[in-house]
Amino acid sequence: MSGGRASFLEFVRFVALGGIAALANLVARYLLNFFMPFEVAVVLAYMVGMVIAFFLFQRMLFGGEGASPRRVSRFIQVNILGAALAWLVSTIMARTVLPAIGWTWQPFEVAHFCGVATPAITSYFLHKFYTFAEPASARR
Image (cartoon, rainbow, N blue to C red; front, side, top):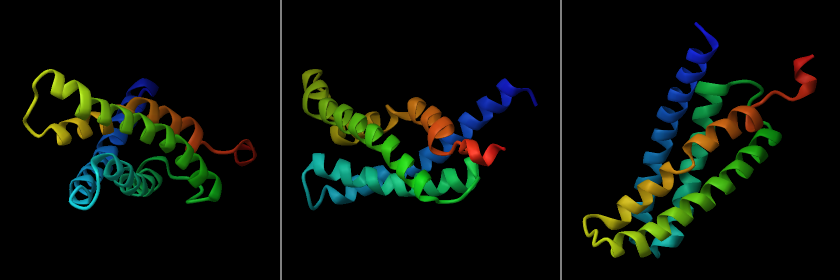
């Protein structure tokens, strides 16, 4: 299989596995919203999805050395960026954009879905070349 096709298929697998984690994130936010404000629920739900994503990516996509402290730390770093982006997009969509256009059907769910989907491409490249990349010492 050519390198471009293999990379594309890897990205498709990343999106599919990320979709499973995103679904867990969305369900967690929906449930948490019964007990706390939307903005807090978005952050906590992102953490639920993040844990699921780490183990799915580790096990089924990038493989390698296991859940080392280095990988976990890098995964958290990438996801702090992703969480900030997801929170920002979710909040702006829910509190500003959707009300401004008169959107009334499931506004928090739509806003949260948009927020969760936003970091997909950047997360793929950061996880592939940073989080799950083999250290130089392991390549020798």
